[in-house]
Length: 126
Image 1 (cartoon, rainbow, N blue to C red):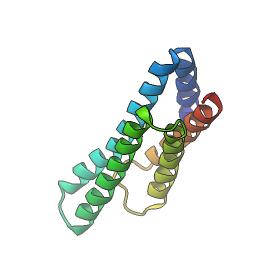
Image 2: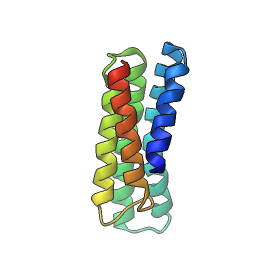
Image 3: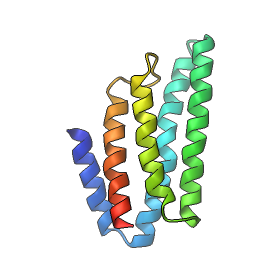
């Protein structure tokens, strides 16, 4: 339930920010979310092996996608940022279903729940 609390608190904080600043902050957070899995993959990669290299490659592509969505969201269509958060929720659940994870077992469902709460909020707010 901590993810729900963090998600609701983030929505409340976002709501009191000036609209442009709130949008920019959401773009930055979206871009940073991919770095969590990249960091986990880099840590796992220190152990070596083919699986670690594949995990690192997948995490790097994912991180790049969310950074690009965050950057495009700054000046692009309004739907990009909420869609990015919802897509990140799908990314989290895909990692949760994997046998081999680069982050703790608790992280993907936690982050997915946060992403969906914040993404739906952005759809409604936007």
